Amino acid sequence: MSRKPNALLSLPTGGPLYTVASRPTRSHACTASTSLNASHRSGSLTPRRADLAQKCRHGSYFSGDSGLRRRPSLRSSREYTSATSGTANTRTPASTPLISTLQKSPLTLHPIHLNPLENTLRTLFLDVVEYIREKKLKEGVSSADLPQMELRFVGGWVRDKLLGVDSDDIDLGITDMGGQDFAKAIQEYLGVPGNLEKYGEIATRQKGPVSIHRVRANVQSSEHGGTYVASLFGRYIDIFTLRKAKRARKPSPKMTVGSAEEDAFRRDATINALFYNLRVSKVEDFTGKGIEDLKNRLIRTPSDPLQTLRADPVRILRLIRFGTERGYRLHDDTMRAMRYEKAADGIRDKGRIRYVSTEFDKILNGPNPRKALYFIDRLGLYSTLFTTDANGFLADTSSWPIAYDSLARLISPRVDDDKELKAVSRQVRGILIRNSLDTYYAWMITALAPWMVVPKHAVGGTFRRYPEGLPHPPWAVDVAKDSLYPTLRNLVVLSEVADRFRRVIEAKSSLLENRMGKTVDEIQEQVRLLVKSWGGNWRSCMIMAILQETMAGRDFEQVMREYDWFLQVYMR
Image (cartoon, rainbow, N blue to C red):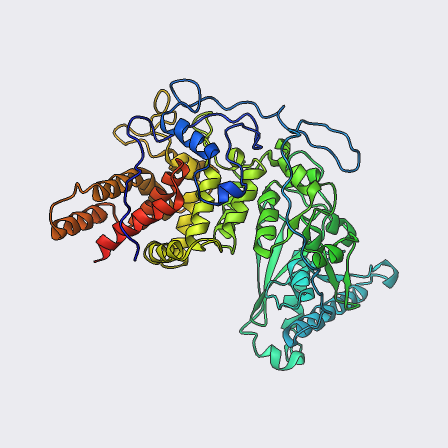
């Protein structure tokens, strides 16, 4: 149990809690940004952070009375230098270093051994190919006119099997035939009396006829175009035709059939461009880099990174997720392309928002959200991913690194934290973050922490029209609506957190300044009534209060002790 703090370092009341301003670039070249150096991570208030906190507290960090400015043009702010040409065709601040990750020892790859189900599926698919061939010959097509149809397991299944991990995600890529036609051929083949029984015990898993349905092509963000899903032996198998890369500026709904090599070079990463040929039972690495990159834990695009990312900007988030989930490095050329503004052009298109939201949810539910937010921050992607169409303003993210570092430290204390701080963090964490859902909400509100402090009617009032009589929601809610595909529950959490975290800070201050009552019973009753008034999401509100106090320059250890004391009073 931690002691009561000796002194209260509450947020000042003489100035605004928020500062929102335009950012000249998406990189951290701003002189007031907080760098992720040793002094920042130590939790102490260094002179640099003390100066930043002082300016933020008194509202003088940015010039002008409003604290808000219009979005600047980003088209002339960064450079993208092609690794092959060595020429700069846009502008990047030379002072901003690329993110580097420590090298790790190479991974050991394993030969692919099919389990009984996978082996049965392989046999079935090859039998269907032969069935199609015989059917064509009976129809009068000459054997010379029949191409050799190749079937391949592709993508994540191959990657995981090489790492010695079984995968339920089986994708079947085919050549010289449409995915729908092959799926129907499977249905037709297994409908012939006696064919299903050929597959022995595995066939008993087939309940009823083979069902096939189409997953509509995601025109804006799709790796496979039109995909057909077949239910076989109790598993769902994605079936699609291999394709060529899309070179057009805007995605086209028409699918262009391509060879296996062309399909490999259009994929998002070399480690996802590995194929397993069913006919010869061999791994195929058409890019020549997939195997080596998998060994070295390296993520890079098979072809020019800028073209790859522009073809599908959602890949930016997908590659960040791959890297943070598995502890892999992003190749310098790939990160350089991510920094280039045009790489993310179209990521906020209406047709892509759902897929951006899906990737971001996977990041927040993943093993290392902090590192993913760090990449988003340092690659300058925040103002692209988290903004609103209602106005032309950007939130100030100069202190955002403190927020995601503080939450990561609360969830998993650092090695150099003393025993008392670890005990305090464990007590606070045990009350505020009870399960995976609480963890998800904690990271969700942290992602939007810079928008939590923007007043509802900043600079001239509302820019989006709402029905008369309805209050304008917090800007964090507007940003979530425009940038993600939030559930109603997520919007409720964001709205309540943005509206109530200041009340949490005030309640904690009142307790520590002995303004709640004269007796212990009175104080406890007052604390419980206040927490009840914050609603069912009071834990998320308190987490945001902690983050906002640390973002304003307060010492993490002192803030944790204060909230630990408040929670002790509440839990008695």
